[in-house]
Amino acid sequence: MTTTELPWHMRGHYAPVPDEISATDLPVEGSIPPELCGRYFRNGPNPLPGEVSPHWFVGHGMLHGIRLKDGKAEWYRNRWVKTKALEGQDSINRETGEVDYTVSLANTHVLPHAGRIMALVESSFPTLVTPELDTIGPFDFDGRLKTAMTAHPKIDPVTGDMHFFGYGFMPPFLTYHRLNAKGELVLSNEIEVPGPTMMHDFAITDRHAIFLDLPITFQMRLLERGMPYGWDPSYGARLGVMPLDKPGEVTWFDVDPCYVFHVGNAHTDDQGRIVLDAARYAPDDVIAMWESDTGPAAEDGPAKEAGPAAAAAATGTARFYRWILDPASGKVEETQLADRSVEFPTVDDTRVGRRARYRYAVAEDPGNRSAIVKYDDELGTVTAHELGTEVVGGEAVFVPSSAPDRAEDDGWLLTLTTRRDGAGAQLLILDATNVAAKPVAAITLPRRVPAGFHGSWIDDSEI
Image (cartoon, rainbow, N blue to C red):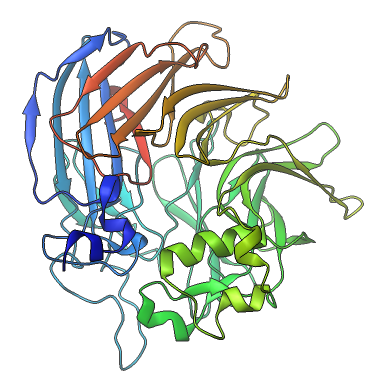
């Protein structure tokens, strides 16, 4: 197969790298803040040499890590997560339909909690890795976890509890879980939903969990296309609010059809309403985006179900939206917050589930103009660090400064950027108080890093 015959997710800045390397004493332009002592890890799909993955979401997980200490970039290394899937094992028994959650792609996120570092994908158990990116193996919280684990758990910054869920294509379709601050699984509770919805993310406040029950569902006819989930307008769209002290008791709010891969944050306002911010795809946009991933639609596929105008009207991009859910009245308010297309929204981790003034995201506009953007909820403004058309930005991870009584945006944004021509990659460190300014530091990596998914800053104090 020639390069031009490969699917889009295996070409250009998405193309996988063929091997694992290590490098030390990385070149730095500017100055790395001495406070940044730790590791930036990022996860993403990277098929083995010779493999052609049928979908961007199903390549084997590869971690990329940069170690910062004492104002220096000590090392870079990349490692495949050594999973059973990498060894060729299948997670599904084709005769019984039974799922083996120890078989994982581990390709979506990597984050620390309770002294562990977990590589995550939403279809399996977490895979533990070391601070040097070596694989320890699958972990089921001492046998207590019986479902898959989302790649987007939420850690309460006050209690240290980790809230997460697992979904599946067979009952139970959705289960809520909670870890305590010690990393012990202390609660699992089924949440009733109508069918096998694909729930990629969710949110918490200081007193609620918010579930996104939206119309992308498991469809057996799509299995051969690599990603057996597709748009289903008959499923409906709703958001569920569950009090954390009443697990399983969910109040559902119908919303306009849409899809959300990633939430920005949520909080409970002074009136007891739940405020949820997220990157929202309108129906035509999610179909355009989804079909670009899964290939041309079948004659009876999702694009046809959406109507003939979908392809012409769609941009395939998400917009930053807000829902305000009022449990007292049952009413929903829905508002678009900004015009620019965004994905991978993030927030200061110390503000998760609480009112936050700032959100950060990746923007990519028509003409391939990429940027890291900062949304100011108080002023309603968007500030951008423009990257141009030849550089693609990755998710921006906020790292707070250690200043006493710091302002909410006093800190840095770390983003891994990749050139479209495959020439190389950099870790940019931006001043979060002045996102538009020149990077505080730009660390040049020894190789191209494929565009990927999510990452974390892991401070030395966490491991």
